[in-house]
Length: 294
Image 1: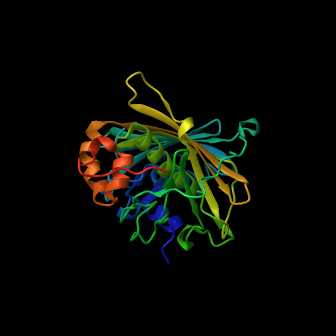
Image 2 (image 1 turned 120 degrees about the vertical axis):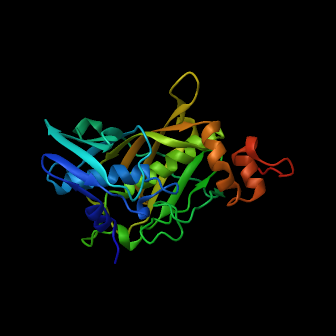
Image 3 (image 1 turned 90 degrees about the vertical axis):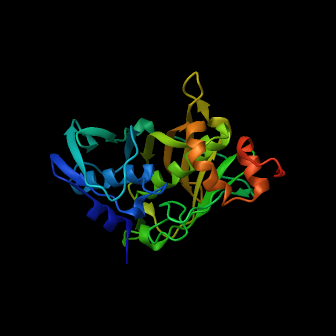
């Protein structure tokens, strides 16, 4: 059976210390041909752990300077200093992404959010091949996200490919799911398409429970602009068990605008009922499309 751990192991190698390689398969993509941002961060964290450079509760941070292509041989530069691991992804000597893994300090732990998603909401469109929501990706979470006036959420029992076989889940589920939630938080606030720009995910527990329903949540009132042009938006999200135990938190920056929308809106329009599309992206709805309300 295909597993997320097995795909990471074949996609990423990292010596201790020094150089490595990355060749991400299409199963790790978000948009066609582009590696999923949360999946990329998780793959680099996994490689650092396999090299004996990281583990236990920790903070994963990534700066996505440029999109990382799938099925492309890329170089890795990995370094460890004072307990912090940094990994840089390069193509022909140019940096595409840089990531770091830092041990979690005890006083960095946050409280679990009170809001855990709505009782009902609108279903967000799914894709076919995305690592998070792809309906035909054999590795994917195949998670369905919902939204209402308060925020975005997902409830799921992770599929078998995300299990470690030891009664726990692979920690990759946190950056992958929370990156997906953050994307929609940013897009629905801006009413524009976009991409993830920066990711910071805090893994509070080194052993995520398998077979337990999980909830991922993020609120619109915690989305705030980072720059004066209101192109970059910082989001906050969390992963917790159905019982309310906090497993991970994330602060993720979404970069959006009309240039991204020009490439992405047709994709969503083809997968979304016209009335719901108008609610989500009113500036890109056809004039004949009605609107909906909660």
